[in-house]
Image (cartoon, rainbow, N blue to C red):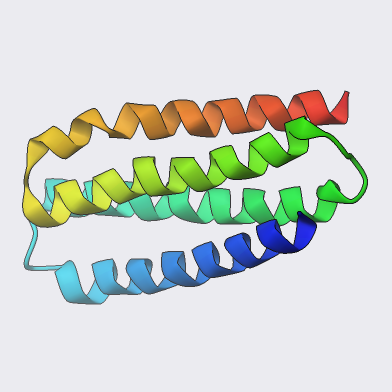
Length: 120
């Protein structure tokens, strides 16, 4: 499982950097400042949790159990749901995507709780 989360973290980090560059260079001037800030929030949390996936990968070999695995998958889900919904919201302006964002936020929170449980 540690290799799975290492790969997921590396891919998420790559995508986060690419989306950050796209937002800074490709979207500036095309989006309103408010929507650009929404996009940047998605990138910020995307990168935080790409690093959390790398941490999870590093710890997976030391802490066996369902909690560490759950933490990794919850971080993946959070990136897709939280950051993904913010990306789509910012680019399309379709506000219904904002309803998905809190689900991703809860996934992030649950991932951190699972990581803490794994440490116990």
